[in-house]
Length: 222
Image (cartoon, rainbow, N blue to C red; front, side, top):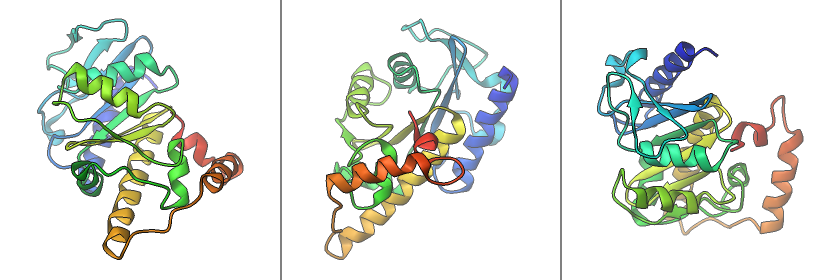
């Protein structure tokens, strides 16, 4: 994809997030790797008013937040940039304040192996990173720790994020994570789910490699 196509795709996916209820207002943000730079949504611009030239561009080699563009990048640029710097296989990060993932994040409840699809995120759970104020380096450090061996995490008292080898895969993962969060929340209301054993999750993860036209492992890869 050309840079212009990526910029347009970021805006389209932002609007999709809000249209489907995966996010509200301008609280979410999306980034995509493009060569040696990162393209990321600007700060506080309503998605319906966003234009391709408003997407901020940051060098992946920089750590000071310097950007190119008429609008400053999302205040969460730090963890987007640090994830891409630390994880070369990650080409997109999606961050939302989706309802059920955020409820669990507020309660600081990780999502255990309540459903076999938890394997799509790299292990037998989805962790909650420690709390730190939005936009800080501390939050970025906490996020990276929670993502060790994982492609997604909840963010304490904040929201959730997913990663992927493409924007489409990161968005797919965000929808899946919010779905599991919703299912887990409701299972807790009736006494809690029966959890799957670690060896079952490992077997599911292995089977994902040959499941369907495009493997779940590939979709959720990060």
